[in-house]
Amino acid sequence: MGRLDNKVAIITGAAGGMGKADAVLFAKEGAKVVITDIQEEKIAAAAEEINKNGGEAIGLVQDVTSEADWQRVVDEAMAKFGKIDILVNNAGISSPTPMLDTTVELWNKVMDINIKSVFLGQKYVIPKMIEGGGGSIVNISSIAGLTGGNGAGPYTASKGAVRMLTKATAVDFAKHNIRANSVHPGIIQTPMTEGLMKDENMKAWFHSVTPLPRLGLAEDIAAGVLFLASDESSYITGIELPIDGGFTAK
Image (tube, rainbow, N blue to C red; front, side, top):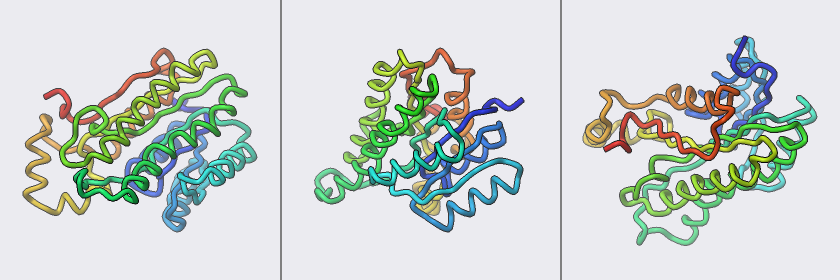
């Protein structure tokens, strides 16, 4: 039996990187997955790949900052599968911009994509979880949500907000058997960090601040997300799970 048999999951930002790794692993473990992204061709390809490999997925185009899009995604998930057991709020953007160089427009963009989207996802999914008797929410934050960051104030603020919204959600909805936990990836090799990895000096610095002798992979994050989404973590809520090769232990 799969670890997510008979579960239905919504995963945002799943056209590539960590979100796609989550979706592929969830499908292998028996979940039916509703995967979303703003990149139409890539999300369709990701869903097709999962279905060809024996999983069950639908890929939907979604702007995670749009309330109407969230309503539509939840409606389509319910129409297709009849319930929602798991929500993974993975969509987000990086913004390595120093605070004093940050425009109001950039600040609003980072906050909209990184934290408003989490609020909206929870707002529209939680009522369906209550109807179904419970569920698991996994919100993807960052090590920047645990530490002060380095020259990226808006990003750090947004990821800290994800962490605290998750805790509030855990407390507010525990009585409905809904769990909420945040995952805090370290330096992970994904399309988002691909450009930085090409800079040898930057890559050397990444290694220098990561105690384990390798950098993380999207699959490393997916393994932790799977655990928190599954019934194996049924007595865990409101926690932060760093998956960072020891970065935050220093």
